[in-house]
Image 1 (spheres, helix red, strand yellow):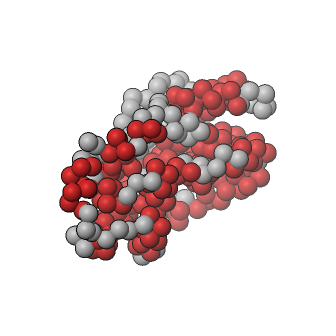
Image 2 (cartoon, helix red, strand yellow):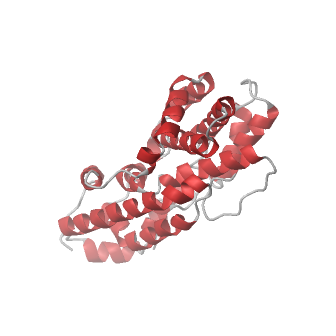
Image 3 (tube, one colour):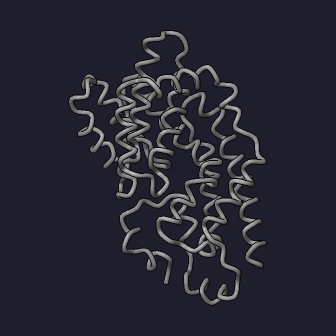
Length: 283
């Protein structure tokens, strides 16, 4: 009996990612072996994770791309269309670790990547930053569905009707959302701005596979599914291997320069968290 039996009422519709990789184990073996071990709450594990992360450096991206970050943050806090979809996400809640907190970080980082890649040409930068931020906010609106990127792209196309964007701009956002999943072939586009926005969305989303995965997303997903920490620990090493694979998938020049460091910092945090949790459980 595997963990999918315990959560089949929900997880059957969810795409595998880090948290699920961590959980694909033999549940009966776990129950027999771990009955007498100390239970650790998800709240305690999250606190440990954040304490561990606080002792690790912030990725260089935020220091060395400061000008792009400033441009992106200013647009994120002032553009009417971006504010509209921020409000939309606030109404959807933040369970499962893929609500406004996650998507907002993706949107701002993606905007910074675009601004850094383009430089100059202020009006072009602003237009493309707005488009990639809207894509960032909407990219996981169907995160709980199978084929969430394709379903999310369809839903985004519906939401973007009559919001003042040209058909070409809507198409750019939809294309980016449809192509943001890892380890999948990407679609083709002859539009250079469309390719940049798609690649920037991907890279900013995969930045979250670094420290954020271990300080926020993992615990939100475990809490949502009410999964015991011991189950997660059983598959932890295979999950870490999955994170490691992301390092070679970044797409923009900025992502290729800074993305691997996000992942390395996340892996170091993840290994330390694992050691702390195992020690606490008395294994």
